[in-house]
Image 1: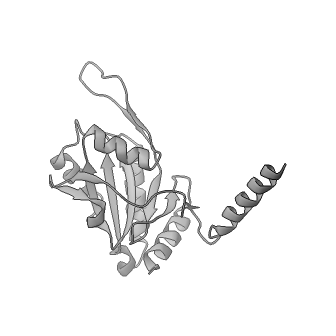
Image 2: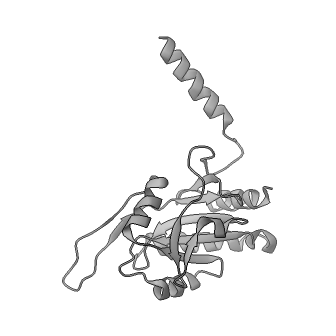
Length: 192
């Protein structure tokens, strides 16, 4: 009985710590800070530290994705376009391809350029991708190849938002209203 009461107390205490003013999912303190070592769209090895200083949106996908990836990235572009220029300049979107076999640096660069200058393509080998996806509790998998060598990749549609210090703050889902996404991104870019 005492354990049940203690568990209830801890749950209520943790729930009371989340900020009720966020309109998307507050994940502060629930997910680890931004950390990785990957290859960017220019073929260079980069680490998360190189992206500190701006609000960072992290999304996992692949360039051959027929629906989720282009829709999500277009939606993020639309959200940032609704923000004032100062706030928009404080956001970067890291698109992590979980399909390194097809998504080389040149392909990533071409793909992210279609969405805007704040979009950066990243990928890595299986070990690096597995380490990063495990860190954020994201899964991905490959479908069967067809006769032409094409295959689908299953992945999450969620976007992780980190503050300028690299701390996980929000989970943006495709079901979140555009107004909520814009409001939370503006607020996040305004954090010191």
